[in-house]
Length: 395
Image 1 (cartoon, rainbow, N blue to C red):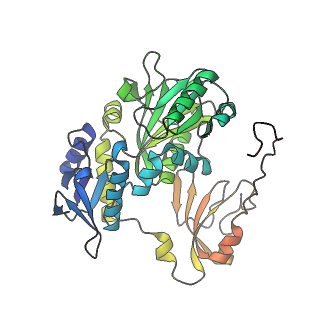
Image 2 (image 1 turned 45 degrees about the vertical axis):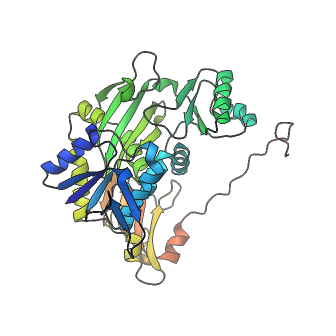
Image 3 (image 1 turned 60 degrees about the vertical axis):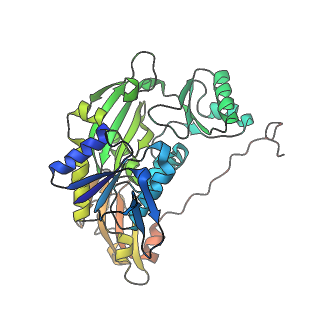
């Protein structure tokens, strides 16, 4: 495999570990400075120049795109995608995770546990926003920031309002988030590669520091993740469109709360804490994908008019719960179940006697009209009606 690592920090621990792991496995590996790439539209096919020369014929890339070069970096990754060069983290995946507002919107749509969060821009709405997330103390987050930079703990409402007003005055957009007191100064980093968590660590801040980033001196210890935390980490990375990700979670009283998904997670802290070859896991995963790439199932299997691929969810109130696939009526409706997902369990070509359970997800091929009739209708949203007052009268 001919591999390129996109990095503006060629001597950093993570970049060097990835290069060493690739070399140890017999792969060709070069480090490319992302900012020296030039996107070329002068030819008939998508092309890239590097330091004035046409880019080499790579099989795959590993993007290590820093926050400061997100726009240009993701454009370069997108161009590699146009050239049919494999990347574990797509340009869209990187953009999704890098913008905290966008990431929160996506996760909340997919029933991933997150701290109560709100986003407002008018100073008149700040007080009500703080009350909606549970009141002070609150966490105030800049939409773009890494390693704990731009994360502020406001101890009371007046301080919170003052901080938010100041940030808004400098054209900064911020999220207002519930402070999870039971997890103060402590979080979990799960390192996801492909469809599994390859390592996890608990990071504990030192002293009065509430941010548990390793760059701020937090102590890191390897842990075995409870199943619900593992599932939350894997699903979050998949929803973002990332195959390599560091998923940060708080230990809430009701379970895992995802606070950030990092598309360029550092390797030093997790490798030292776990004593595992995380870089090697990444290289092995990419090598397998290059050798046996994932297909776009929807495009490959839509071979006849009226037929296609769809995912059906077994809702908690579904009549299918407790029935076998044979008795479910799917086959009679010309629907074939290709894969059954139950939590982190994946069952390809499940047997007829498999009993369906709540929240099973069925990847099916068959008549689109029949499958469409099995998808529950969305419940209409009923807006909360609030009496008009001086503060919410239309202008």
